[in-house]
Image (cartoon, one colour):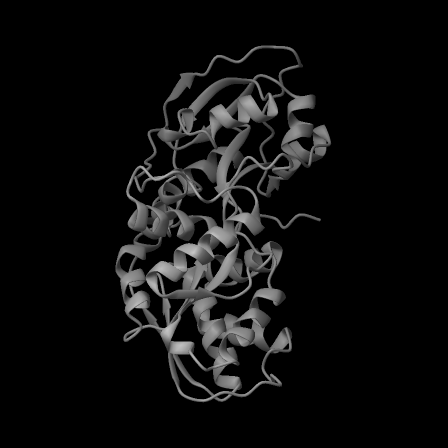
Length: 344
């Protein structure tokens, strides 16, 4: 589950994209909410069993591996209206071919091309499909398909990739943008306006779970991908949805340092960070001090020691700038952010 984000609910970029990013974060947390940046620091306690490590400024940001699986999985997965593909044995396998061609580093590259290099989602999607060899599929299909997308760039690019692959196979596919999940999921379940949407395993699982079983429903999503997909599949049956294969690519909560810091201390995972450094300064949205996947989880799961918490935003420009300028040591980001340096 994510901190407030807007493909469930926290600012991911500016404007509409930021709203979409916030939504995903909160659904992942169990409820949609918002995160904003205050910029003030609060004392977070923090002990001293290991040496304190100062922040190291630098332009390049890298994610430290969540090697003890604190975060809920949020792999990309095709969500499909069940009635729309009844009797069609081609559409979902075509979408599965997209899932197989994506990983998180590839998704970072796609987002960089759109968010940083300012290319269009259409151009980036077409290039990806050609480079991945998905533009000449063996399967063939027919009929009209509308692929929905949320109103942030990553969703638009993924939706355009889906449509490009379906068109190459003989479908008449187009992409339409339909706001946030509260708007587009009912349209997908109805199946008349939209038949396919690129989704996120953990966030969607909890969104449907709460719609079906109530706001206080026990969580179904977890750090176990297979178990979460199994739960999502069962929930999907109740609302008329089926799903393709999850992609290795994830867009989930993650924690980043500057590459200069990671190189100086020889850390690539959160466990290694805990062994190497104490007295850390953590940056993120105000909710971070209370959310189990944020500061409390980092302390309990990894034994990380924080000297301060600085209230910023969730994966947004404030947090990334604070990392780059050496104002914080560790910051909450989203794992597919186009400004990240892919892990080597």
